[in-house]
Image 1: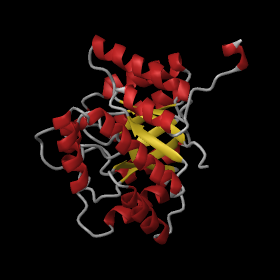
Image 2: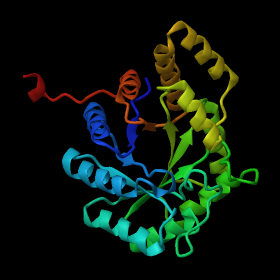
Image 3: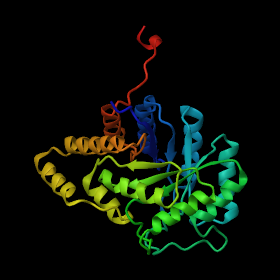
Image 4: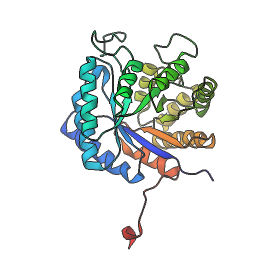
Length: 289
């Protein structure tokens, strides 16, 4: 029997009071699963920088979880970016997910700040030089929209590890074979650092299709047809749970022992999938006495 995987969860920072309650409810639902870490995202163009900083510090202090802060190169100088990083370290947060980041909506392609980091590799190098952080990075089993060369995503991931990253988390995908092909290509390129599959439980099919189109994730025809039929029959929640559980099971059978879930601050489907994989709350004798 395949052992239960180690799991981690991604959240996004709340932008109003209702969203704050939703985030905390999500944390309460998922923290009993003893995640390896949880991460908090940045918005496109750095729009949630302050909200991310507040959410990271609050979760670190109040939840007891290992919290990783997303940090990007967008719309900030090198000094400003490293100041934020050092504030995290001073607060006891030593895990960073270092990303180039998406440009502000409607602004076209990424353009580095004149005094900022020009790429994720530059950001990783600067963070590594401080000696204060465990650095995770993004990886792309399907080609990143800005990648212009075949195999370029693998080559660029190797540069990230060479710069000081310790682990990669992939963009989401729909079939386990997509991850396995990418993993094989990384091994062939000499990458031996951990690459953790990123899994997106499909809470909203229209929203996921939009995400996939924006990030270059390939949507298999069978997935689209299955959801079209399930939505007509009112079975989309059941289908979403089945597809996500099967994807994770296939990954585990292929040797994966860590999974990173993009929760979208909606914990129920992620929790149900984790339970199906054998990731359940740890109960002590005191709890049942």
